[in-house]
Amino acid sequence: MSNAKVTPISGFLEFLPEGRIVEQHFLDVIRRTFEVHGFASIETRAVEPVERLAGKGGDVDKEIYGVVRLSAPAETTEAALGLHFDLTVPFARYVLENAGKLAFPFKRYQIQKVWRGERPQEGRYREFTQCDIDVVDVGQLAAHFEAEMPLVVADAFAQLPIGPFRIQVNNRKIPEGFYRGIGLTDIAGTLRIVDKLDKIGPEKVAVALEEAGATAEQARQCLALAGIQSQDESFVDKVRALGVHDPGLEQGLAELAAVVRAGHAVRPGVLVADLKIARGLDYYTGTVYETQLIGHEDWGSFCSGGRYDALASDGRTTYPGVGISIGLSRLLGLLVGKGLVTASRSTPAAVLVAVNSEEERSASMAVAATLRGRGIPCDVAPSAAKFGKQIRYAQRRGIPYVWFPAAPASERGDSVKDIRCGTQVDATATTWMCPPEDLVPQVTAVSGD
Image (cartoon, rainbow, N blue to C red):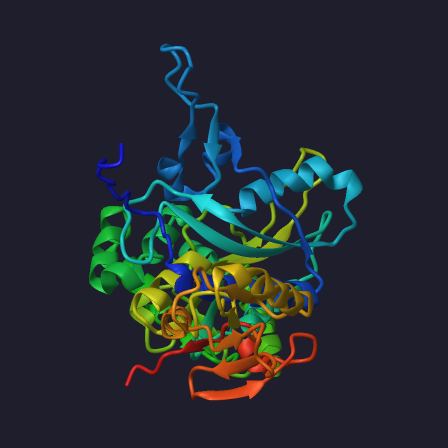
């Protein structure tokens, strides 16, 4: 077995230690931001009945991973359970099962792995981490929550080294009403085609629309709507100038204008009305979101979501909601993979405690215990090698300080050395203060220059 060849499996993201520190930093910032906005944490099971997952996600249906026991009878051909492909569908089930125990409106965040059986490629994985927030209520959901979702995400992103970003927002009622107004009948199919605009371009979208039954003029009108963008409410007049009338269209314009207005008041320029955003998942019914890094638009969206009015219902009561999800693995796979963000070291340890000799290792362990008890992360040298080798051990890991315990026969006490600059000072483990900027690894953006 020691000579067995390891065959990589595509679509599964595994970071080196530096990348994992970056990931944990992002997770900490996102979790903390969700919590300061009042969202409570939950975790749902990894599997749902296939029948619940199927039919919820448009093209995602064929990407569901079924779960089957290896020892299942040979005649068993279909899995009863599937791995969840997002966190919204299991959350809807969670709400239905626990409705009598929850206080509404219920605000939750959820950070978990999800699975999709799509073709792996850069930024797309079979297994990835999503960071979701949702608000659900009973019967009706206040419209102001639709404006609050992207602002929570903007708050988190402003604390992360990702550079400038924009959150694109639309309302599904606008394209749905517009399509009805120009005589199209396959609304869901048209939405899915237009949602591919950034991926395949306007010419191929027009061809796909005509192949789906639209006339050349209807395809042109669909593209005209999709081409409208604005950072303010001017999109309303631009849509009306197209001369299409439908009650749902007017309702969608009013709702989107309210979201853009609220976003502009808090974070001007971050929210952009972009009427090509449709979202391919069928359960969205109102506001929808996508997010891009400015300067890296070719990466596509890494944060998306929207309003859903009928995803959670027990037949008597409906629980409408709105949510947004950060595709953390997608975002970090690109940022870390392209070297645009890095950690200052590959270990949490801020201090390496040197070992004078193996007979004196207990003294080094005592120093480490004292430092750890004061909240200073540290490691102990793995061997009593020459100090130069122990220092190189720290350098390779980015550990900024090396602690030298006093030798038994020495009149001098302990000392600590900043190996980045060579400064060495006397110190005691009970009082030495690690500079705050060195206490934990620093995660920073790397200049592209």
